[in-house]
Image 1 (cartoon, one colour):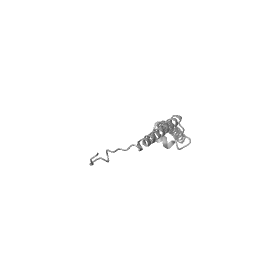
Image 2 (cartoon, one colour; image 1 turned 30 degrees about the vertical axis):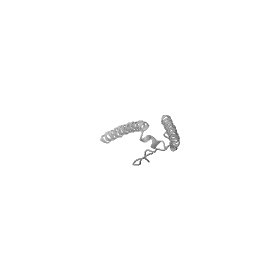
Image 3 (cartoon, rainbow, N blue to C red; image 1 turned 45 degrees about the vertical axis):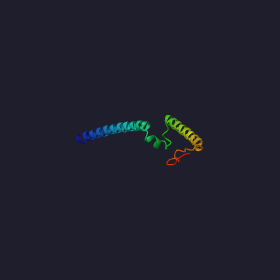
Image 4 (cartoon, rainbow, N blue to C red; image 1 turned 90 degrees about the horizontal axis):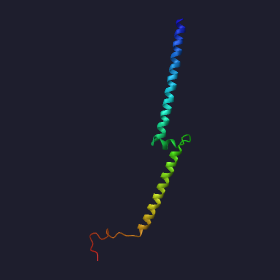
Length: 98
């Protein structure tokens, strides 16, 4: 009788610990998924993998790339316009201008 009771207690202990571990694993998985979807540090790392695909993040990345490319083209245009203009103030330091 004592052996049956000890087996029953062992079974109850194992089954309850199994449920607790299962619950804690699902909580950990859900919290990690939430953290990974909101973290700006992990998104670029996770974007390398095919299983992580967030359309909002992709859209924001494309918009930032478009803005960067527009800014670069505008800077190049300004540099081209200013390349013909000379600044004589740096040449005339210490010299008398006529």
